[in-house]
Image 1 (cartoon, one colour):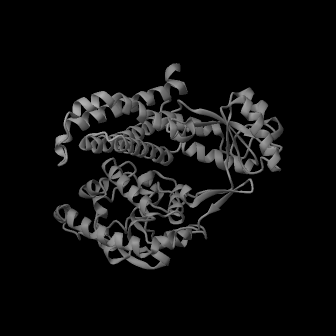
Image 2 (tube, helix red, strand yellow):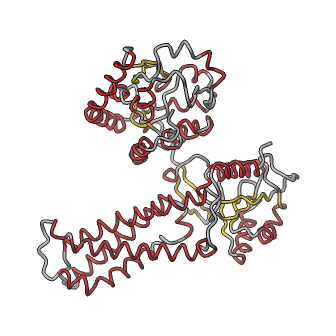
Image 3 (cartoon, helix red, strand yellow):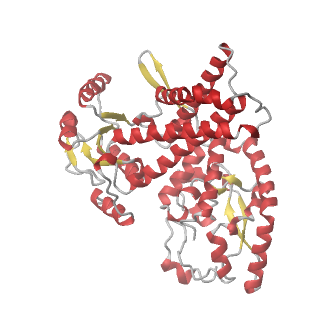
Amino acid sequence: MTTVSAHLDAARQAAPEVRLPALVMSKRFQLVALLMTDALIITLSIIIAVAARGLLPFAGQPDTESIIKAIGPAIVGGWLLTLVIFETYSQRQLRAGATEYKRVLLATSAMAAAVGITSYLMKYDFPRAAFVLMFTIGSFALLLARLARRRVMGTIRSRGALNTPVVIAGDSAHIDAIAKVLRRESWLGYRVVGAVTNDRLTHTLGGLPVLGNLTETVSVIDRHKASSVIFADGSFESPSEFQRMAWRLEKHKTNMVVVPAITETSAQRLDVRPVAGLPLVDVAPPQALAAARWVKRAFDLIGSALLLLITSPLMLIAALAIKIEDGGPVFFRQVRVGRKGELFECLKFRSMFTDAEQRLDELAHLNEGAGPLFKIVDDPRITRVGRLIRRFSIDELPQFWNTLWGDMSLVGPRPALPTEVAAYDDDTHRRLDVRPGLTGLWQVSGRSDLSWEDAVRLDIYYVDNWSMVQDLMILAKTARAVLLPSGAY
Protein backbone atom coordinates (compact mmCIF):
# COMPACT_ATOMS: atom_id res chain seq x y z
CA MET A 1 0.00 0.00 0.00
CA THR A 2 1.33 3.44 -0.93
CA THR A 3 0.97 5.77 2.04
CA VAL A 4 0.69 9.54 2.10
CA SER A 5 3.72 9.78 4.38
CA ALA A 6 5.78 7.86 1.81
CA HIS A 7 4.79 10.33 -0.90
CA LEU A 8 5.64 13.28 1.34
CA ASP A 9 9.00 11.78 2.32
CA ALA A 10 9.88 11.25 -1.33
CA ALA A 11 8.88 14.81 -2.16
CA ARG A 12 11.00 16.22 0.68
CA GLN A 13 14.01 14.23 -0.46
CA ALA A 14 13.60 15.49 -4.03
CA ALA A 15 13.30 19.13 -2.93
CA PRO A 16 14.27 20.44 0.53
CA GLU A 17 11.44 22.08 2.43
CA VAL A 18 11.34 25.88 2.38
CA ARG A 19 10.67 27.68 5.67
CA LEU A 20 9.38 31.23 5.39
CA PRO A 21 8.70 33.91 8.04
CA ALA A 22 5.15 34.01 9.42
CA LEU A 23 4.55 37.43 7.85
CA VAL A 24 5.36 36.15 4.36
CA MET A 25 3.10 33.14 4.97
CA SER A 26 0.04 35.37 5.48
CA LYS A 27 -2.30 35.75 2.52
CA ARG A 28 -2.85 39.41 3.34
CA PHE A 29 0.87 40.12 2.99
CA GLN A 30 0.98 38.30 -0.35
CA LEU A 31 -1.97 40.29 -1.70
CA VAL A 32 -0.48 43.61 -0.51
CA ALA A 33 2.85 42.68 -2.12
CA LEU A 34 1.05 41.85 -5.40
CA LEU A 35 -0.88 45.13 -5.28
CA MET A 36 2.30 47.14 -4.68
CA THR A 37 4.07 45.29 -7.51
CA ASP A 38 1.22 46.12 -9.89
CA ALA A 39 1.30 49.78 -8.77
CA LEU A 40 5.05 49.94 -9.45
CA ILE A 41 4.65 48.29 -12.86
CA ILE A 42 1.87 50.68 -13.90
CA THR A 43 3.89 53.70 -12.75
CA LEU A 44 6.98 52.54 -14.65
CA SER A 45 4.86 51.84 -17.74
CA ILE A 46 3.62 55.43 -17.70
CA ILE A 47 7.15 56.80 -17.28
CA ILE A 48 8.54 54.63 -20.09
CA ALA A 49 5.61 55.55 -22.35
CA VAL A 50 6.34 59.26 -21.91
CA ALA A 51 10.07 58.80 -22.46
CA ALA A 52 9.65 56.59 -25.55
CA ARG A 53 6.74 58.41 -27.20
CA GLY A 54 9.06 59.83 -29.87
CA LEU A 55 9.48 56.33 -31.34
CA LEU A 56 5.94 56.45 -32.72
CA PRO A 57 5.06 58.44 -35.86
CA PHE A 58 2.12 60.21 -34.20
CA ALA A 59 4.06 61.48 -31.18
CA GLY A 60 3.60 65.20 -31.86
CA GLN A 61 1.65 66.00 -28.72
CA PRO A 62 2.28 69.23 -26.78
CA ASP A 63 3.11 69.21 -23.05
CA THR A 64 2.90 65.43 -22.68
CA GLU A 65 4.94 65.58 -19.46
CA SER A 66 2.62 68.17 -17.92
CA ILE A 67 -0.50 66.23 -18.87
CA ILE A 68 0.83 62.94 -17.49
CA LYS A 69 2.05 64.63 -14.28
CA ALA A 70 -1.42 66.06 -13.75
CA ILE A 71 -3.44 62.90 -14.35
CA GLY A 72 -0.79 60.18 -13.89
CA PRO A 73 -1.74 59.43 -10.24
CA ALA A 74 -5.40 59.16 -11.26
CA ILE A 75 -4.48 56.68 -14.01
CA VAL A 76 -2.46 54.56 -11.58
CA GLY A 77 -5.29 54.60 -9.03
CA GLY A 78 -7.96 53.91 -11.65
CA TRP A 79 -5.96 51.07 -13.20
CA LEU A 80 -5.48 49.41 -9.81
CA LEU A 81 -9.16 49.90 -9.00
CA THR A 82 -10.10 48.23 -12.30
CA LEU A 83 -7.84 45.28 -11.46
CA VAL A 84 -9.65 45.00 -8.12
CA ILE A 85 -13.09 45.21 -9.76
CA PHE A 86 -12.16 42.42 -12.18
CA GLU A 87 -11.13 40.27 -9.18
CA THR A 88 -7.52 39.86 -10.23
CA TYR A 89 -6.55 39.78 -6.52
CA SER A 90 -9.15 37.18 -5.56
CA GLN A 91 -7.60 34.03 -4.08
CA ARG A 92 -9.99 31.97 -6.22
CA GLN A 93 -8.64 33.53 -9.43
CA LEU A 94 -4.98 33.45 -8.36
CA ARG A 95 -5.11 29.63 -8.34
CA ALA A 96 -5.99 29.42 -12.06
CA GLY A 97 -3.35 30.83 -14.40
CA ALA A 98 -5.42 31.21 -17.58
CA THR A 99 -8.28 32.88 -15.66
CA GLU A 100 -5.88 35.23 -13.89
CA TYR A 101 -4.21 36.34 -17.14
CA LYS A 102 -7.58 36.76 -18.85
CA ARG A 103 -8.89 38.98 -16.06
CA VAL A 104 -5.73 41.12 -16.09
CA LEU A 105 -6.13 41.67 -19.84
CA LEU A 106 -9.84 42.46 -19.48
CA ALA A 107 -9.16 44.91 -16.66
CA THR A 108 -6.41 46.65 -18.64
CA SER A 109 -8.62 46.83 -21.76
CA ALA A 110 -11.46 48.26 -19.68
CA MET A 111 -9.14 50.91 -18.24
CA ALA A 112 -7.85 51.83 -21.69
CA ALA A 113 -11.43 52.12 -22.96
CA ALA A 114 -12.40 54.26 -19.98
CA VAL A 115 -9.48 56.66 -20.55
CA GLY A 116 -10.17 56.84 -24.29
CA ILE A 117 -13.92 57.38 -23.97
CA THR A 118 -13.53 59.94 -21.17
CA SER A 119 -10.96 61.89 -23.17
CA TYR A 120 -13.26 61.91 -26.22
CA LEU A 121 -16.39 62.96 -24.33
CA MET A 122 -14.56 65.73 -22.44
CA LYS A 123 -12.64 66.77 -25.58
CA TYR A 124 -9.40 66.26 -23.67
CA ASP A 125 -6.27 66.04 -25.84
CA PHE A 126 -4.70 62.96 -24.24
CA PRO A 127 -1.26 62.18 -25.81
CA ARG A 128 -1.96 59.39 -28.30
CA ALA A 129 1.59 57.99 -28.42
CA ALA A 130 1.78 57.85 -24.62
CA PHE A 131 -1.67 56.21 -24.53
CA VAL A 132 -0.67 53.40 -26.93
CA LEU A 133 2.71 52.76 -25.30
CA MET A 134 1.36 52.99 -21.76
CA PHE A 135 -1.29 50.32 -22.15
CA THR A 136 0.79 48.11 -24.45
CA ILE A 137 3.80 48.06 -22.12
CA GLY A 138 1.57 47.90 -19.05
CA SER A 139 -0.38 44.89 -20.31
CA PHE A 140 2.76 42.93 -21.18
CA ALA A 141 4.53 43.86 -17.92
CA LEU A 142 1.54 42.99 -15.72
CA LEU A 143 1.19 39.59 -17.39
CA LEU A 144 4.93 38.94 -17.11
CA ALA A 145 4.87 39.83 -13.41
CA ARG A 146 1.90 37.53 -12.79
CA LEU A 147 3.68 34.72 -14.63
CA ALA A 148 6.82 35.27 -12.54
CA ARG A 149 4.74 35.30 -9.35
CA ARG A 150 3.11 32.00 -10.29
CA ARG A 151 6.48 30.42 -11.04
CA VAL A 152 7.92 31.53 -7.70
CA MET A 153 4.81 30.52 -5.75
CA GLY A 154 4.71 27.15 -7.52
CA THR A 155 8.33 26.46 -6.57
CA ILE A 156 7.77 27.49 -2.96
CA ARG A 157 4.61 25.40 -2.65
CA SER A 158 6.18 22.33 -4.23
CA ARG A 159 8.81 22.52 -1.50
CA GLY A 160 6.31 22.45 1.35
CA ALA A 161 5.68 26.12 2.15
CA LEU A 162 2.60 28.34 1.72
CA ASN A 163 0.41 25.26 1.43
CA THR A 164 -3.33 25.21 2.13
CA PRO A 165 -4.49 22.40 4.45
CA VAL A 166 -7.41 20.62 2.79
CA VAL A 167 -9.81 17.80 3.66
CA ILE A 168 -11.32 15.63 0.91
CA ALA A 169 -14.84 14.23 1.38
CA GLY A 170 -16.82 11.61 -0.54
CA ASP A 171 -16.35 7.99 -1.64
CA SER A 172 -12.89 6.68 -0.78
CA ALA A 173 -12.06 5.75 -4.39
CA HIS A 174 -12.81 9.28 -5.61
CA ILE A 175 -10.93 10.74 -2.66
CA ASP A 176 -7.79 8.81 -3.62
CA ALA A 177 -8.07 9.95 -7.25
CA ILE A 178 -8.22 13.62 -6.18
CA ALA A 179 -5.43 13.20 -3.62
CA LYS A 180 -3.21 11.66 -6.31
CA VAL A 181 -3.69 14.70 -8.55
CA LEU A 182 -2.96 17.14 -5.71
CA ARG A 183 0.19 15.24 -4.74
CA ARG A 184 1.34 15.15 -8.36
CA GLU A 185 0.62 18.85 -8.91
CA SER A 186 2.25 19.98 -5.66
CA TRP A 187 2.79 23.49 -7.07
CA LEU A 188 -0.94 24.11 -6.55
CA GLY A 189 -0.23 24.33 -2.84
CA TYR A 190 -2.85 21.95 -1.39
CA ARG A 191 -1.73 19.81 1.57
CA VAL A 192 -4.18 16.94 2.03
CA VAL A 193 -4.81 16.47 5.76
CA GLY A 194 -7.07 13.45 5.44
CA ALA A 195 -10.36 12.02 4.21
CA VAL A 196 -13.97 12.28 5.32
CA THR A 197 -16.06 9.35 4.13
CA ASN A 198 -18.88 7.02 5.16
CA ASP A 199 -16.83 4.03 4.01
CA ARG A 200 -15.83 1.92 7.02
CA LEU A 201 -12.07 2.43 6.82
CA THR A 202 -9.27 3.78 8.97
CA HIS A 203 -7.25 4.62 5.86
CA THR A 204 -8.17 4.83 2.19
CA LEU A 205 -6.44 2.49 -0.27
CA GLY A 206 -4.14 5.39 -1.18
CA GLY A 207 -3.07 5.74 2.46
CA LEU A 208 -5.05 8.81 3.54
CA PRO A 209 -6.21 8.70 7.17
CA VAL A 210 -10.01 8.75 7.54
CA LEU A 211 -10.77 11.58 9.98
CA GLY A 212 -14.53 11.03 10.29
CA ASN A 213 -17.75 10.41 8.43
CA LEU A 214 -19.62 12.90 6.25
CA THR A 215 -21.88 14.09 9.06
CA GLU A 216 -18.75 15.15 10.95
CA THR A 217 -17.25 17.20 8.12
CA VAL A 218 -17.47 20.57 9.88
CA SER A 219 -16.04 19.28 13.17
CA VAL A 220 -13.19 17.58 11.27
CA ILE A 221 -12.39 20.87 9.53
CA ASP A 222 -12.31 22.70 12.87
CA ARG A 223 -10.27 20.02 14.58
CA HIS A 224 -7.59 19.89 11.89
CA LYS A 225 -7.71 23.63 11.02
CA ALA A 226 -8.37 22.94 7.33
CA SER A 227 -8.81 26.04 5.15
CA SER A 228 -10.59 24.19 2.34
CA VAL A 229 -12.74 21.13 1.84
CA ILE A 230 -13.04 19.30 -1.47
CA PHE A 231 -16.25 17.36 -2.04
CA ALA A 232 -15.97 14.42 -4.44
CA ASP A 233 -18.66 12.06 -5.73
CA GLY A 234 -20.68 10.46 -2.95
CA SER A 235 -20.58 13.52 -0.67
CA PHE A 236 -24.26 14.44 -0.88
CA GLU A 237 -27.43 12.45 -1.32
CA SER A 238 -29.59 15.43 -2.33
CA PRO A 239 -29.26 19.07 -3.48
CA SER A 240 -30.71 20.28 -0.19
CA GLU A 241 -27.95 18.46 1.70
CA PHE A 242 -25.35 20.29 -0.38
CA GLN A 243 -27.06 23.62 0.30
CA ARG A 244 -27.16 23.03 4.06
CA MET A 245 -23.44 22.14 4.05
CA ALA A 246 -22.67 25.38 2.20
CA TRP A 247 -24.59 27.34 4.88
CA ARG A 248 -22.65 25.65 7.69
CA LEU A 249 -19.27 26.22 6.05
CA GLU A 250 -20.12 29.88 5.43
CA LYS A 251 -19.90 30.54 9.17
CA HIS A 252 -16.48 28.88 9.38
CA LYS A 253 -14.96 30.82 6.45
CA THR A 254 -13.94 27.57 4.81
CA ASN A 255 -13.41 27.42 1.07
CA MET A 256 -15.74 24.86 -0.52
CA VAL A 257 -14.69 23.06 -3.70
CA VAL A 258 -16.83 20.53 -5.54
CA VAL A 259 -15.20 18.12 -7.99
CA PRO A 260 -17.68 16.90 -10.64
CA ALA A 261 -17.33 13.49 -12.26
CA ILE A 262 -15.50 15.15 -15.17
CA THR A 263 -11.76 14.51 -15.42
CA GLU A 264 -9.08 15.34 -17.98
CA THR A 265 -11.38 17.88 -19.65
CA SER A 266 -10.19 21.42 -20.38
CA ALA A 267 -12.17 24.40 -19.14
CA GLN A 268 -12.69 25.50 -22.76
CA ARG A 269 -14.94 22.47 -23.31
CA LEU A 270 -17.09 23.21 -20.25
CA ASP A 271 -19.87 25.76 -20.09
CA VAL A 272 -22.00 26.16 -16.94
CA ARG A 273 -25.59 27.10 -17.79
CA PRO A 274 -28.08 27.79 -15.01
CA VAL A 275 -31.43 26.28 -16.01
CA ALA A 276 -34.35 26.55 -13.58
CA GLY A 277 -31.90 26.83 -10.68
CA LEU A 278 -29.81 23.86 -11.83
CA PRO A 279 -26.16 24.58 -12.76
CA LEU A 280 -25.98 22.37 -15.84
CA VAL A 281 -22.49 21.73 -17.26
CA ASP A 282 -22.51 21.56 -21.04
CA VAL A 283 -19.50 19.52 -22.25
CA ALA A 284 -18.29 20.08 -25.81
CA PRO A 285 -17.30 16.89 -27.70
CA PRO A 286 -13.64 15.75 -27.75
CA GLN A 287 -11.46 17.51 -30.30
CA ALA A 288 -9.67 14.59 -31.99
CA LEU A 289 -11.46 15.19 -35.31
CA ALA A 290 -10.76 18.93 -35.16
CA ALA A 291 -7.07 18.19 -34.59
CA ALA A 292 -6.94 16.39 -37.95
CA ARG A 293 -8.54 19.16 -40.04
CA TRP A 294 -6.95 21.49 -42.56
CA VAL A 295 -6.20 24.35 -40.13
CA LYS A 296 -3.71 22.28 -38.16
CA ARG A 297 -2.31 20.70 -41.34
CA ALA A 298 -1.80 24.12 -42.96
CA PHE A 299 -0.05 25.33 -39.81
CA ASP A 300 2.20 22.25 -39.92
CA LEU A 301 3.08 22.78 -43.58
CA ILE A 302 4.00 26.44 -43.19
CA GLY A 303 5.70 25.96 -39.83
CA SER A 304 7.82 22.96 -40.85
CA ALA A 305 8.91 24.64 -44.10
CA LEU A 306 10.03 27.78 -42.24
CA LEU A 307 11.76 25.76 -39.51
CA LEU A 308 13.60 23.66 -42.10
CA LEU A 309 14.87 26.86 -43.67
CA ILE A 310 15.93 28.37 -40.34
CA THR A 311 17.61 25.25 -38.93
CA SER A 312 19.31 24.06 -42.13
CA PRO A 313 22.76 25.51 -41.16
CA LEU A 314 22.55 23.79 -37.76
CA MET A 315 21.50 20.50 -39.38
CA LEU A 316 24.41 20.73 -41.81
CA ILE A 317 26.88 21.17 -38.93
CA ALA A 318 25.31 18.25 -37.02
CA ALA A 319 25.47 16.01 -40.10
CA LEU A 320 29.16 16.80 -40.66
CA ALA A 321 29.99 16.16 -36.98
CA ILE A 322 28.25 12.77 -37.02
CA LYS A 323 30.00 11.73 -40.23
CA ILE A 324 33.43 12.87 -39.03
CA GLU A 325 33.16 11.07 -35.66
CA ASP A 326 32.84 7.48 -36.89
CA GLY A 327 32.12 7.59 -40.62
CA GLY A 328 28.72 5.94 -40.16
CA PRO A 329 25.39 7.03 -41.63
CA VAL A 330 24.14 10.49 -40.70
CA PHE A 331 20.48 9.59 -40.31
CA PHE A 332 18.76 6.99 -38.19
CA ARG A 333 15.55 5.68 -39.72
CA GLN A 334 13.04 3.89 -37.53
CA VAL A 335 9.51 2.62 -38.16
CA ARG A 336 6.98 4.42 -35.98
CA VAL A 337 3.20 4.32 -35.71
CA GLY A 338 1.32 7.32 -37.00
CA ARG A 339 -2.30 8.42 -37.15
CA LYS A 340 -4.84 5.57 -37.20
CA GLY A 341 -2.03 3.02 -36.82
CA GLU A 342 -0.33 3.77 -40.15
CA LEU A 343 3.41 2.99 -40.16
CA PHE A 344 5.96 5.54 -41.33
CA GLU A 345 9.74 5.96 -41.31
CA CYS A 346 10.72 8.48 -38.64
CA LEU A 347 13.93 10.44 -39.34
CA LYS A 348 16.50 11.42 -36.72
CA PHE A 349 20.15 12.30 -36.70
CA ARG A 350 22.04 9.19 -35.59
CA SER A 351 23.12 9.64 -31.98
CA MET A 352 24.21 6.05 -31.23
CA PHE A 353 26.88 3.72 -32.50
CA THR A 354 25.93 1.72 -35.58
CA ASP A 355 25.60 -1.52 -33.59
CA ALA A 356 23.17 -0.02 -31.03
CA GLU A 357 20.25 -2.27 -31.99
CA GLN A 358 22.38 -5.43 -31.66
CA ARG A 359 23.46 -4.40 -28.13
CA LEU A 360 19.89 -3.83 -26.94
CA ASP A 361 19.42 -7.28 -25.40
CA GLU A 362 22.60 -7.12 -23.31
CA LEU A 363 21.45 -3.79 -21.80
CA ALA A 364 17.83 -4.79 -21.16
CA HIS A 365 18.45 -5.26 -17.41
CA LEU A 366 19.53 -1.59 -17.13
CA ASN A 367 16.24 -0.24 -18.54
CA GLU A 368 15.01 2.84 -16.61
CA GLY A 369 12.17 3.69 -18.99
CA ALA A 370 8.53 3.82 -17.93
CA GLY A 371 6.03 1.28 -19.23
CA PRO A 372 7.06 -0.18 -22.61
CA LEU A 373 9.69 2.54 -23.17
CA PHE A 374 13.41 1.65 -23.14
CA LYS A 375 15.59 4.37 -21.61
CA ILE A 376 18.99 4.46 -19.88
CA VAL A 377 20.29 7.73 -18.44
CA ASP A 378 23.95 6.98 -19.26
CA ASP A 379 23.39 4.77 -22.28
CA PRO A 380 26.82 3.43 -23.36
CA ARG A 381 25.60 3.17 -26.97
CA ILE A 382 25.43 6.97 -27.38
CA THR A 383 28.31 8.67 -29.21
CA ARG A 384 30.00 11.88 -28.05
CA VAL A 385 28.28 13.92 -30.77
CA GLY A 386 25.06 12.04 -30.04
CA ARG A 387 25.11 13.08 -26.39
CA LEU A 388 25.38 16.72 -27.38
CA ILE A 389 22.69 16.72 -30.05
CA ARG A 390 20.34 14.76 -27.77
CA ARG A 391 20.80 17.24 -24.96
CA PHE A 392 19.46 20.06 -27.12
CA SER A 393 17.06 17.91 -29.21
CA ILE A 394 19.05 18.61 -32.37
CA ASP A 395 18.75 14.91 -33.25
CA GLU A 396 15.02 15.43 -33.83
CA LEU A 397 15.32 18.28 -36.36
CA PRO A 398 15.06 15.96 -39.43
CA GLN A 399 11.50 15.22 -38.30
CA PHE A 400 10.54 18.57 -39.85
CA TRP A 401 10.64 16.52 -43.11
CA ASN A 402 8.20 14.02 -41.58
CA THR A 403 5.92 16.93 -40.73
CA LEU A 404 6.20 18.40 -44.20
CA TRP A 405 5.28 15.02 -45.74
CA GLY A 406 2.28 14.64 -43.43
CA ASP A 407 3.43 11.68 -41.31
CA MET A 408 3.82 13.88 -38.24
CA SER A 409 2.65 17.20 -36.80
CA LEU A 410 4.59 19.95 -35.08
CA VAL A 411 2.57 19.24 -31.91
CA GLY A 412 1.02 15.94 -30.90
CA PRO A 413 1.52 12.72 -28.93
CA ARG A 414 4.96 11.13 -28.91
CA PRO A 415 5.49 8.88 -31.98
CA ALA A 416 5.35 5.28 -30.71
CA LEU A 417 7.15 2.14 -31.77
CA PRO A 418 5.07 -0.80 -33.10
CA THR A 419 6.20 -2.86 -30.08
CA GLU A 420 4.86 -0.18 -27.74
CA VAL A 421 1.53 0.00 -29.57
CA ALA A 422 1.20 -3.78 -29.30
CA ALA A 423 1.14 -3.34 -25.49
CA TYR A 424 -1.51 -0.59 -25.53
CA ASP A 425 -4.86 -1.08 -23.81
CA ASP A 426 -8.06 0.25 -25.41
CA ASP A 427 -7.80 3.68 -23.77
CA THR A 428 -4.16 4.22 -24.78
CA HIS A 429 -5.06 3.60 -28.45
CA ARG A 430 -6.75 7.01 -28.26
CA ARG A 431 -3.26 8.51 -28.77
CA LEU A 432 -3.35 7.28 -32.38
CA ASP A 433 -6.39 9.37 -33.33
CA VAL A 434 -4.13 12.30 -34.28
CA ARG A 435 -0.74 12.62 -35.97
CA PRO A 436 2.23 12.17 -33.61
CA GLY A 437 4.19 15.33 -32.89
CA LEU A 438 7.76 16.60 -32.74
CA THR A 439 6.74 18.11 -29.42
CA GLY A 440 3.74 17.87 -27.14
CA LEU A 441 2.54 18.07 -23.58
CA TRP A 442 4.89 15.19 -22.76
CA GLN A 443 7.83 17.24 -24.07
CA VAL A 444 7.16 20.31 -21.90
CA SER A 445 6.14 18.35 -18.79
CA GLY A 446 9.21 16.29 -17.99
CA ARG A 447 9.97 14.13 -21.07
CA SER A 448 11.85 11.02 -19.93
CA ASP A 449 11.29 11.92 -16.26
CA LEU A 450 7.55 11.28 -16.62
CA SER A 451 5.99 8.01 -15.54
CA TRP A 452 4.36 5.97 -18.30
CA GLU A 453 0.90 6.63 -16.83
CA ASP A 454 1.49 10.41 -16.79
CA ALA A 455 2.84 10.40 -20.35
CA VAL A 456 -0.26 8.54 -21.59
CA ARG A 457 -2.54 10.80 -19.56
CA LEU A 458 -1.02 13.93 -21.08
CA ASP A 459 -1.24 12.55 -24.63
CA ILE A 460 -4.90 11.58 -24.24
CA TYR A 461 -5.66 14.95 -22.67
CA TYR A 462 -4.08 16.62 -25.71
CA VAL A 463 -6.13 14.55 -28.14
CA ASP A 464 -9.42 15.25 -26.35
CA ASN A 465 -8.80 18.94 -25.70
CA TRP A 466 -6.90 20.09 -28.78
CA SER A 467 -6.93 23.76 -29.70
CA MET A 468 -4.73 25.96 -31.88
CA VAL A 469 -3.98 28.20 -28.90
CA GLN A 470 -2.76 25.18 -26.93
CA ASP A 471 -0.47 24.19 -29.82
CA LEU A 472 1.08 27.67 -29.85
CA MET A 473 1.60 27.57 -26.09
CA ILE A 474 3.26 24.14 -26.30
CA LEU A 475 5.60 25.36 -29.06
CA ALA A 476 6.55 28.37 -26.94
CA LYS A 477 7.24 26.15 -23.91
CA THR A 478 9.26 23.73 -26.05
CA ALA A 479 11.91 26.39 -26.65
CA ARG A 480 12.39 26.66 -22.88
CA ALA A 481 12.41 22.86 -22.47
CA VAL A 482 15.15 22.60 -25.12
CA LEU A 483 17.28 25.35 -23.58
CA LEU A 484 16.82 23.82 -20.09
CA PRO A 485 16.81 20.16 -21.14
CA SER A 486 15.73 18.34 -17.97
CA GLY A 487 14.70 14.78 -18.76
CA ALA A 488 16.45 14.64 -22.13
CA TYR A 489 18.51 11.48 -22.44
